[in-house]
Amino acid sequence: MTRILGVLNVTPDSFSDGGRFVDVDDAIAHARSMRLEGADVVDVGGESTRPGATPVAAADELARILPVVEGLARDDVAVSIDTMHADTARAAVEAGATIVNDVSGGLADARMASVVAELGVTYVVMHWRGHDLSRGTTYRDVVAEVRDELSARVDAVVAAGVDATRIVLDPGLGFSKGADDNWRLLAGLDRIVDLGLPVLVGGSRKRFLGALLPEGAPMEHRDPGSAAVSLLAAQAGAWGVRVHDVAATRRVLDVLGAVDGAAATLPTVLAPVAGEPDRIALRGLVAFAHHGVFDHERRDGQRFVVDLDATVDLRAAARGDELARTVHYGELADAVVAAVERDPVDLIETVAERVAAVALGFAGVDRVRVTIHKPQAPIAVPFDDVAVVIERRRA
View (cartoon, rainbow, N blue to C red):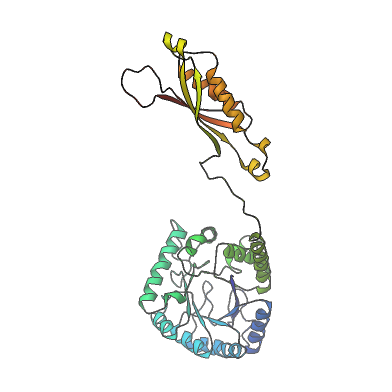
């Protein structure tokens, strides 16, 4: 089940809701509301990471977040602390937070990884290329590069002592990425999930979603697009999504869960394997005929053996268990033998062509492979077999 992390910014300058929840009571009330709407975790942040945001002193960040974290912990609300600073992370965890969500992935504060390791909490490592989000936005293959850079960060924080089983990855939508990069990351999110660690996706209300709307549209108009991003992330296997509109996200994830549950009850539908068509195979059909260029062959006759593969789509016949929707292989075998045994010709190549035409005359046969064996061919040296093989399809 994909977890929902409800965003709670206790900052005056957040790009989405700056100033709305700087009051502790307002912040706690909003967190409780998100919990009732379906948030699994409340992600508390005391420093805006929007482009151009002014850095916040550690003391100011702590003053903003600690009363809120403590209040939520008393209410048994699961709390994540959104911070790049090791001292803030430590204080928040000691106050009751159980997740450290670090948008810098440990790069902004060299002590962060060792502090998280000591605290033994879940650590969200985000892809980050520095404080200036307008730099580092050139990618040849954004999915591959984000994947590689996240892998490198995992190696670094594990080397610092963080338990690998407690790491969550975040591809960092909107951080040092152009709009097209964000869409490509969403399209290739399964490649990040394939790293084998839980993945958190935070696309809620970000600028690349606003670019789809009329200029000047209110921030809340980005919520339907944000819910769509959450749905796509969940379908790709994301561990969690970080969102402002918890209620809408809960609804779309509930719909996805209902569909997945229904899918589990459907009968298995078998699909053909690419490049491997269905076929009916006849092996070792024996016919006696008088084909050959020599007089004794025409006079005495000899045995011919036919192998045939007829390409036929067998799905409809299998679903309905209906003989009429496949090729009756008994009738096909009779027709092949009759084609071989009728008027003599010089070459078995001609016989093979005749057999192919007969087989393709059966409704549903799209392609045939015909092998005509001539085990008594007039060859002077010892041999096991001689045959011609042709493939023909319906023109």
